[in-house]
Image 1 (cartoon, helix red, strand yellow):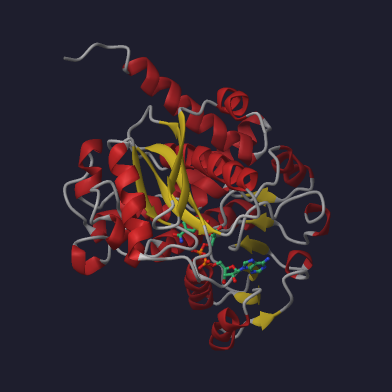
Image 2 (cartoon, rainbow, N blue to C red):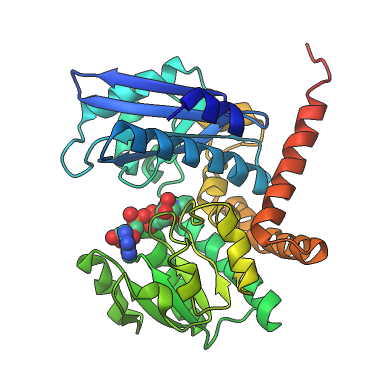
Length: 363
Ligand code: NAD
C-alpha cells in the first residue's frame, strides 16, 4: 500500500503509529481533516490479520468521521484510532494508559472515544493520562455509552426514509431485516418493535440473538439476512455489506442501518439507486452517538459548542437526523443523483465554506 499517495488522494492530514512493547500496545491514529475542529472518532480494538488491514481500516474510518461530523452540523473534524489486538485477551490498564499518553502527545488534534472492541471502562483508563477522551461513564460526568443515541438517530432517519418512499413515516407493519443485534442493533430493534414493525434478525453471535424472542423477531442466518424479502434492510454489524454480491440479492425498498462504511466501494451507492433502493447514507444516519458525545464537556470545550452534558439538548439534535435525511433525499431527487452522492455534496459544501471563512486573520 502506498500510504502517502493514498493520504494525498483523499486529503488526510496525519497517520501516527504507536508502539509500547511493555504494555503490548500497537496502535494507529489517523487524522483526516480538522477544518471544522479537532478530529473525533472511536478507538477500535480488533485482531487485524496484518498491518495493512489495520492501516486500511483506520484511514477509511477516519475519513468517514469527517463526513459524519460535518453532516451532523458539528464543529469537529474526522479521526479514528485502531488498537491492534484481541479485546477478549489483550486489554489491560497499562495498554490503555500508554495509548492515552500517545493521545496527550497529539495535543488535542485527536479526541478518542469507544468503538467496536472498546468500552467506557477503557475510556476511563485513557482519561488517567489525557483529557482528549470522551464517552466516559455517566458517574464520571460523561455521556456514557453512545449506542442508544446512535440507535435513536438511525430510527429517526429510517422514519424519514419511510416518509419519502411510502408517503408516511409510520413504521407500523413494516418488515425490517436487521443484521447485527449488538449494542446499536438491539436498541434499534426495541424502537422498531415499539412502532409495531415486523422484525427478522441475524447475528453471528448466538448470545446476541437471545433478545430476539422478546421482540417477536424471526431469526435467519447471517448469510440469508441480505436476501430476506422486506421493506427495510438495516445493516448494524460490520462494514462493506453493500457489495457486488449482496446488492443484486436485496429484496427491500430502503437500506438504513448503523454500520460504518456500508458501501464496499463508492460505486455501490450508484448500484443501489439503479435498483430503485433508497439508501440512507451511513455516516448521516449513524451520527447520533457522535452528536451525543459533542454535548460532553471537558475534552470538547475547544470546539466552543459545549457548555456541559445536556441529555435533552443532545437528544433534540440527534432527532434532527430526520431533517438531514429529508434534505439529502430532496437534493438527490432534484439533482437526479444517488443519495450517497447528495450527502457527500452537502458535506463538501460545508467544508469548503468553513475553509473560506478561515482565510480571515484572527489574532
Ligand atoms: P456491537 O459489536 O455491539 O454489535 C455488532 C453485532 O454484529 C454483534 O452482535 C456481532 O456479533 C454482530 N455481527 C458481526 N458480524 C456479523 C455478521 N457477519 N452477520 C451478522 N451479525 C454480525 O457494535 P455496535 O456498537 O452495535 O455497532 C454496530 C455497527 O454500528 C458497527 O459497524 C459500528 O461501527 C457502527 N456504529 C456504532 C456506533 C455506536 O454508537 N455504537 C456509532 C456509529 C456507528
